[in-house]
Amino acid sequence: MAAMRRAARQDAGIASRVRHFLRTPEELYRYADDPDALHHLASDRASAERITRYRKRLLDHMRATGDPALPQFEAFLKAHACRAMLEEGNRTTQKQEP
Image 1 (spheres, rainbow, N blue to C red):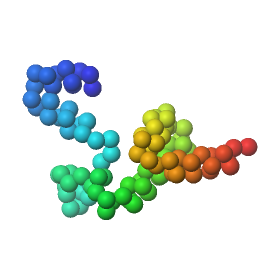
Image 2 (image 1 turned 180 degrees about the vertical axis):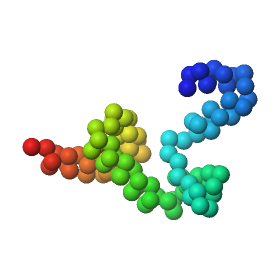
Image 3 (image 1 turned 90 degrees about the vertical axis):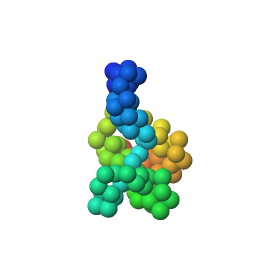
Image 4 (image 1 turned 30 degrees about the vertical axis):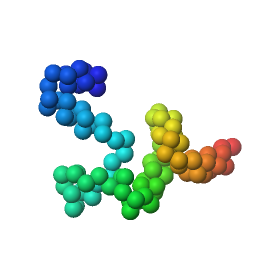
């Protein structure tokens, strides 16, 4: 990514790709209706319940598989006020430990 950022200083096309790539940490699109992914639904209040479910599924999977990016994802969730989801997962994990 560092190389792309350097190249972006001199190439407008690469700069556009870098901005596109770094625009948001979460994305949600309805590809059936929006095949070009132009209408970002993650910030849409109507999608909040779905996003919460997806975050929970991802968190559960990351914990179950020992994903090395788990601490970063948990920090992201804390920053986005998803503490209840984290606490629920911590209680579940503690129950499963011998």
